[in-house]
Length: 90
Image (tube, rainbow, N blue to C red; front, top):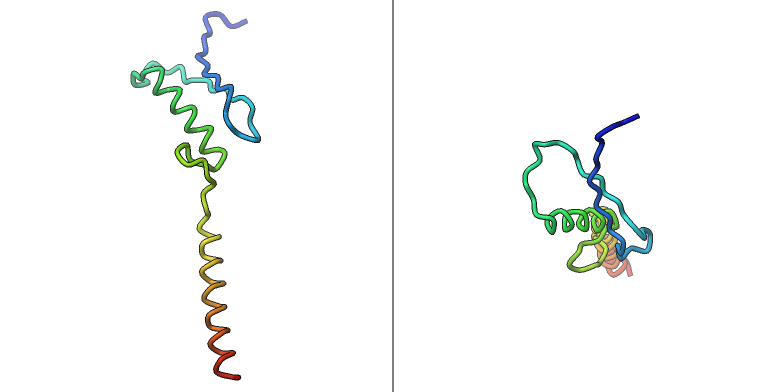
């Protein structure tokens, strides 16, 4: 049996996600944690929820990955080179 155990929990009900309905955050019980306002802690929890969805809080749009950008640039360069070669041959 555990006596004197206390956990501080932050509960985010409306995450705005299609995947998550609720989120629970259990805060560290270290006494060395820097002092923070309650609003700062809630904002941090919301940032964690938003980052796990792959979106930013400001825009709500998904981030485009580096691989996607590289693929699009490569496809564009390939199309331009193919067009030039097609023009030279014919």
